[in-house]
Image 1: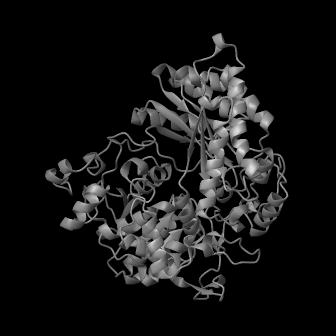
Image 2: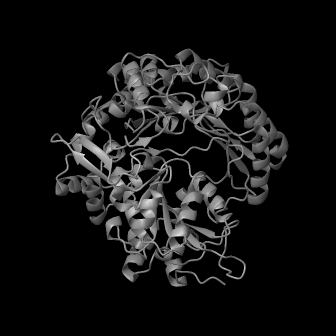
Image 3: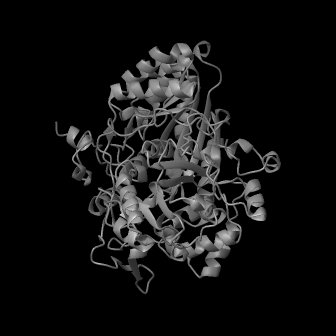
Length: 624
């Protein structure tokens, strides 16, 4: 029987002790040495609280895939909440894996998913509580190899000194190569440095210590080069081209407590055809690749059977663009509707959502509809290449209301490049026009009162997007933008039906620095962490003053990273990564944005983004 890492006394003193005890349904145990010959211990870490990390599909996929290897035992680790964090530091309890309850400092690998920039101090928390040196250069032979992956790894530089290597791209491809290399190096007693040197030759693997960065007098990057001739200058993004044959968890781990997304997740496709100019995911996950309908049917049945979940979510960047959306929804309703299994359809475009599908989903369980026009005016929707007209938006809302829906959530961004005051005011006008569509329905046919929730976030330029050259705004400007929208909503005829929420401006500015920063930003992250920064993604723990002090202590100018538009010939910290989408294409899209020119989606016309180099997905489909 497992011995828990935490005593009963500690577990009873912390909030939600089930976060730390493991043993959930479908968790994998390989501690019986008579049955398993485990040669590699891998700790899969999500640098946030259990409820957030357990909702992450990528970890579930890799956890299942790794554990299918008889020589690998992959276990899970999440950031301890602040109450346990304090106890572990005071009592010097090392951070442990949920399955075995053993310290992860004794593992071979620690893989940390980098999903959101505001979790960077939690990355240091994991290493610190694990009693592993924070800096890669200070680690010894017996320390685990620390790997970073996920979307934020597309600019790994702000975290480069803390990681031994980064995995760039989709995890289903070359991890087996990495494990096999590790076993080979282990057998011949190769050193840590020898393993890292050989690992850097595997496509998709980036070892920061093997590259040197130099800077110009103005602070921009002068060069970024490998230190040895056998290390590649470019790191190739890894892509799974056959999604139908790709690994997928048949038995996802089921949490003991309610988590953020407490449902079975069915990834219907990966990538996006739309080309929104602000969207990093839409660029780095190109090209669009679909899973077959029959594959999805099998996965859905297996997951619902093995988990007992009463909800299944169809996951993708743009669900409406899945070729067999209506068929998969019909199958799920016909097959599982009688069991009251709810179907969640996130990432829908208001222009492509079938009224028939919508009404059938509503028959199972009513919820609000979520749409993301992103900008209030047509000009700005053209600037960001959203590909939505006001007529299409209103028609979609009209159909939704006639289908019995009365709650709509609308997501917009403020502070976009080329945005003007009237564009911000048009957010309120569009929300009001949508409310008018509802109240145009005869009163006796309405489904209660209309509720429209308008949420705005502040735009953050991200790597590998056409807006990676864009400048940001001072904090007072962002607050003024939100004030404009708030005031305009109050002036609308249907203001009582509209609720407005907006994001924090100071968080936005720091996110912008961490998203596009270079290696020098690591000093700021370390300073902020050492002075108490933790759980920065959580409002109750966010402290902007700590970060301002960190910039001051390190002598790094925050405005250099936020308030200047990048030169077209500037070397970016992430330019050493080949992500399929070319810098030439992104720059052309930046120019088209300035002229408010719309670029057709991938199924309408190939724009030559570069993703055709992978010879599959929508790039091939569009030529057939």
